[in-house]
Image (cartoon, rainbow, N blue to C red; front, side):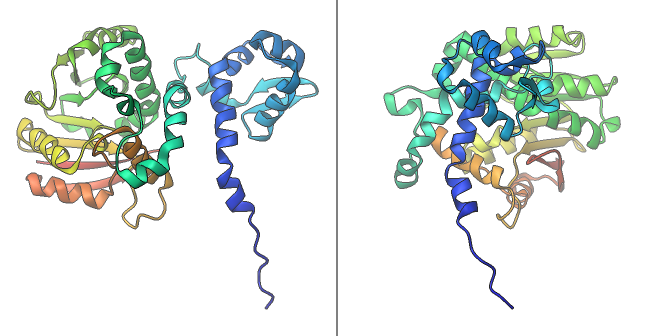
Length: 337
């Protein structure tokens, strides 16, 4: 049997993957998809609308066609079904907030990944003497952008949690580290018997309440101000921690799980959802890359497998645990007290 001919194509595609990534991030930054949501345009008019230099504008648009982010019919460009739904800032389904944050912050910080791997130290604002979360929460405009990014990251997952978790057994819930309130709103919309809300630092309250009001959920969802490191967690039947545990080191993770256990009644449930790494640590590339992002962004954070989280939950007292896939790279680990 002839030996398969080896090619460097896959290696090269991964190695220069940042070419395509930055092309998409710049398109989001420029508002290209929002502009095309108004109707198809040719290269000349689209360039003018976006204030682009003519030298490489057509290459830029055609690259997005080749990457599957735009369609071209004749000389006119249009959004695909996905970019029309998720990258038009005028639509409530807009999921580009996370991409905006990647473009504004993470893209340049990931340039220092080698240094992070050698030193084990964060490569974000900390390097210039800033505290990322402290700086973020002190700037209302940056904070709101970050909270919107978290909504974009979690909204689709929240809709699946609303379907897969047995909410009919419960009446109250609270989302810990709730950000804008995207998760709480999606669950409340799907289950009319539920009341609850979200816990976050006091500065988040007006953003949460505005989002709940815009979704007509202000009568059923309340904001619980607090610091989940310093304060006890609210008493409720179901607690949710989405994209929270991976920010912290193991001791801090265990402390938060113990606080969750203490806040729940017998039979209560904790839902932890993240880009949970598969137990073999071979398949969920996004989860593993997100763990590297925690190296870039935090002093001790890391992502983890479902088996890891189940073991930690058992250590703090949860009787039953399970892992369920959600959407994309996300899964949830459920612990029952």
